[in-house]
Length: 262
Ligand SMILES: [Mg+2]
Image (cartoon, rainbow, N blue to C red):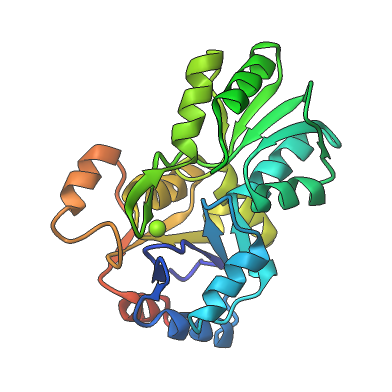
C-alpha cells in the first residue's frame, strides 16, 4: 500500500449499518486526518446531499464535511455536464440529485429534456415511468445514478434506484449509462476530486459486487473489509460470482488501520 495517494471509502456496511456506527469508524477517520492521507466518502446513495451524508456521519460521532462526500448524484450530474454543458435534464430522483444537477449548471425541465437522469425516487409513479420512457424513446440520454436493485431498510429490503431503472429500461428499450458502483464513473470522478489517478487510489468497501468490482474495474487497489455484506463464509461465493479478487482483506477497521499504517 506504499504507492497509495488517497482512499475512497464506502459508507453503509463499511463505516455504519443504517444508523449504527461500525466499531472503530471514527478512529479510522481521525487517523487518516492525522496521517494526512487524503480520502473521500464514496456512496451510491443518490437521495442525500453531501451535507446530508456528512451530517449523518457526524450524528454517529464520525467527523465529516460535505466536501469530503462524493455521491452517485454528484458524479451523474458531472457526467452529463461534461458531455453537454448546461444540458436540459428531467430528474426522477430526490433532493441529492436535484441539488447536484443545479450545482453542475444543468437546466431542470419537466418536458423535452436532453437527458433523463434517474436515482432513487420514492414518489415514482406510472405517469413518471410513461413520461421518462417516452422522452428516452424520442432520443433523450438516459443516466442512472446507481444500479442497486434493493436497499436495506428497517422494514427489510426496499426497491432501489436500479429497480426503477430496470422499469424505465424495459419501457424504453434503452439501457442507461450507469454512474455508480460497480461501474467506474463514480470511482474515477471521486479520484479526480482528490487530484489523483484511479491507480493511485484504494477503494475500501464491504461489497464485492459493487465496491470491489468498481475499484478493480477502475484500476484502483481494493481492500475488502468484512464489516458488512461479505463474511469469511460467503467470500468464496462472491469471488466466484464477481470474478474479482480484492488486493487485501481486513476483518475489521482496526486491521485496516494497521494495513494502512495509520
Ligand atoms: Mg457498503
